[in-house]
Length: 403
Ligand code: ADP
Ligand code: ASP
Ligand code: MG
Image 1: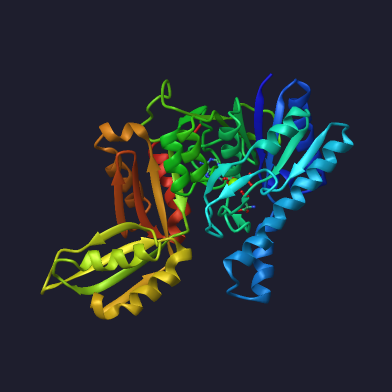
Image 2: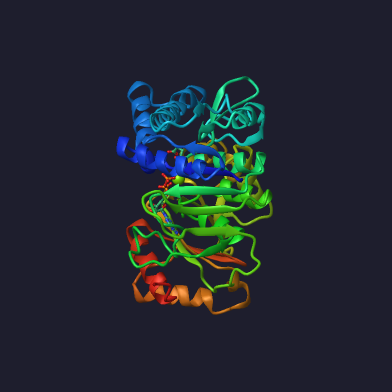
């Protein structure tokens, strides 16, 4: 007998038919003699709809109240799924994040799971119940509801698998596994049989939302056996695991991330401490800076450009504006009409030609590059958003990643 955690995303439980399909998958696993803990997301576009609803009332609601609202989506899903399983004649209980003991840090909207008080979960499993847990939510030290950030149900599932020492964590979604690129952008992208935690972490952080990056980080930390597979049909999924026999492909995947904006500080005085001034201000506001370039000094001035998440753009500009005297730039320019396109692969580190091949693909597609960043296992470029999908296709082609 094994303990299996199964997570079903929003599209997998979007309507009654989907809910019953998922219920069948769960009860089949249970019938085989396994203990089953299930994590579900809000149905279909529910979370987006709730965000819109909030805007109608208050364009800048407090993060606390936002979390009270957003957590309701998952509460609908757990009860409906439990009702479907009841109807199929199996013992089941649904639990909110709080009931399941998901304790998080205090941060509303983007909370991290600190620990799971698993007594209730274990008691329910002891009674041979199928346990359905609301994803994406927990409770903080003030006994307030918190949410984990978009796509956070993946993290709920991996955290439960780690806390319960599950034998397997299955992430069921609307694609068959992890592909060399988003199959919606590159229809002939290839499904990967397996991928290392490190590569998956990069892909997820660089825009492949098939797995939330925090969930991968946690799976690596606690060595959770993770699998991505389809909730629609039976097909071999993708194993995410420690390297071992994972073949070191030069390029594993191509991603696009639209959640990015560029800020440029024009003609900053060319003297020590300027970069420190700018980036420490942003760090204090918890604003993550990604790609950075600084021009060489000319006429005693230089330009500093960097990217932040689109959701941080307003805060970042506000902070720079409030401190314009200390920074002393002639002007601050910004655009969010950009995308970051990246290639990821653990084999890259030993192969010097990879970046240039990526740039060649972009050149041949007549796409201009604004910024570049590289690390041992990735190369990222910032380009105009209108070119992003074309860029992904061109790069995918250049590295012949197709089926
Ligand atoms: P869920 O609701 O199940 O959490 P998501 O929409 O969050 O599903 O994630 C699944 C989607 O991720 C797919 O529909 C696909 O469009 C997208 N995706 C992006 N990059 C990849 C990739 N490299 N491989 C597979 N899917 C990807
Ligand atoms: N419902 C949440 C969201 O849409 C969490 C998730 O789907 O994982 O982001
Ligand atoms: Mg998701």
